[in-house]
Image 1 (cartoon, chains in turn blue, orange):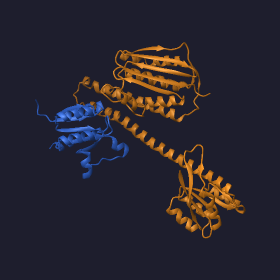
Image 2: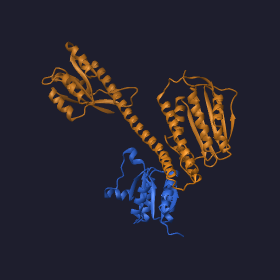
Image 3: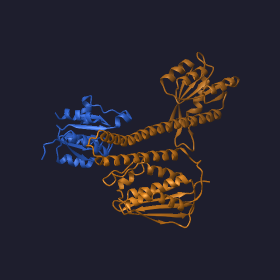
Image 4: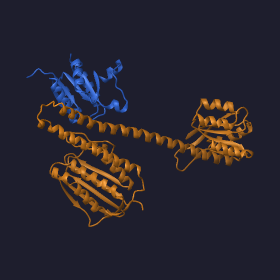
Length: 129
Length: 375
């Protein structure tokens, strides 16, 4: 077995999943690609990834938040990134700039779609250190 | 029972108490409004007091005498108009100042009662102004809801269009930078997926246009007596490539002829949606049964497929805008999520109904009943 870090990727857009998966492998990590919230929940119950990247809207409007919450409850030390397009479309903001938001959003980083490869790499390295 | 806050502005105590007497036990009701209306009365003896009251409290109706000490009725009316205070104003004027009454109406007063008035005259005037107020507020609410809906619709459209654009853009960038090496074959899946996503966008855009068309045009579409069996046959023909791809057979049970008074384009949208859904959500080598049955001044259209079916919960969600049933079996099927809501809107125009009967892994039956369009 390799000692590559396992990165859990959950996105119901199969192309996004493929693309981010490709980036993550190029960075030298091992992507675990799952395309729905339900399977991701099962995965979290049985495995501990090194980092997780969730899409926000899947089966539910807040699938990404639910997954974050469940993952953090079980493994508080695993960093979570939520990637979504919601903010730029609706003007909604899920900023993690204050402590209250940090406690209920349960994600370490919140990124806008369409994320650039180098930006993702930088943030992942930062969170994994 | 709704209570309308009413302010009586008149310097003559006799008029104020007279109005109070006439309106205190008076209720208005209309056959088309469920609510009854009562009046909660307050008084102001001059213009300055009236203005103070109007600025602090929200009144529904203001009965306004023009000849007031201090500030004139028409000036108060001007302020109400300028500050966009949401209330209906009725002027109380003597016959001598009919001119002024007309001017007041131009300035935004709803109507006027000439002094002296009988109780019956005042009541009739109150009935009218109440109805006016009710309808005015109703349209305001409707406009608000419409705006809210449009905002939601646009932001979802934005999201639905952005996802494929993001995917295609990322694929192109990967190809441009030759991230998988310089063998073109390694990029084939990405190119095919990009084409697929662009197709999805095109479907979304044309569905969106259909939906706005259905919503904006009402009864004015050209209609004629058409044989809808031949319309259905034509749609089946245009969808042949889709059927062949998945090896799906369509069996039809049509009468020799079935005339229906309708708009051709709308009926085409119905068949196109029904049949393409039955193909998309079918299994490979599946079957579709399409039945058209004329009945007394209506027609019945039934599609039955041998597809993946839906659970009861999924069926309940089905007719919302942008609803796409997401599960393992549907995740590779491109769709806009608008098809069925377009279908439903058209069927409603024909005073019809649509029923769905579905069993997971067995198939789905859509039954539509529509009446001839009004001539």
